Amino acid sequence: MTDDTARHRFLSVAENRNIQGPYLIICARPGVSKRLADTFLMRLYCKKGGCGDCADCRKVTDGHVDIMRLSAPKVAEFREAISFIAEKAYEGGYKAVVIENADDMTDAAANSMLKSLEQPPKDTVIILQARSASGVLPTVASRCAAVYLAPEKNAVRAIADTLKADDTAAHILSDLSGGYVDEAALLYQDTGFWDARSAVLEICQKLLSQKSMAISAYADCLEANKDRLLPLLSVMQSYYRDIHVYMKTNNKNLIINRDQTDSITNAALHFTSGAISNMISAILKAERRFFFPVNFRLAVEKMFFDMLEEKNRWKK
Ligand SMILES: [Zn+2]
Image (cartoon, rainbow, N blue to C red; front, side, top):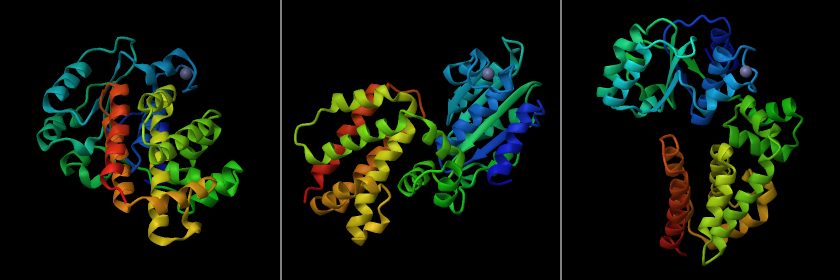
């Protein structure tokens, strides 16, 4: 299964209450997998077919007694999941276990899952999420129905046509969504997103230009946009990647964040490529951290500190 077919077939499983064993969502963008799994669960739990608005739907994202979420679980955590699904659903419906970052599991943990994957109790759904198929143990993958999500081939065009977005917005959305039109649509329709993007881009510039840093104010900004964290981290990566690409090519046409062209070309003159690429790595590292239960504030501040450290370590 690929693309939209995969997505729709997977969601129709929830609509028809026709669960056939565990599912493995494979997508390079963890945020996209997570959203698809949430949509699936809303369709399963909601009495109105996944309206996204009712108490049942909200519980899917905010915490549901019958849904357990794990990220790259260790053997002991997985044992907890087994006893969790062995009990009856509190609310009388389905039990669900969602395993994010299945490609980061140890072999021991993955092997401890096999029996549950083969014979999950009745009315139980197990959803695994992985960035790539190759990272998942074949014995695990072979027991799951795979849902491959591949980005649209002509994403910029498809996004511009579908959303009636202008060229600049389509380029930006294509980059941030990883080329997934549905994901791009969610960002495009999120009225607060563009303001949040501007605020975050301003922080990106300040991180480069200022000597004394208002890290706590930067963290405030991300905290106020907690539910858009992943796309905003992508905005940051995208901005620094533009600087990096421009450094190497001197080609303005390759800049994705075209509304930032001046600041991008200017930054390219003043920093080393080592500084910029290590700042990007610091963001990526933070992104991975947010898939585990972390202290949000500490994790965000650490990311900004790491970025500054990299910037200063690689001074021109
Ligand atoms: Zn609902």
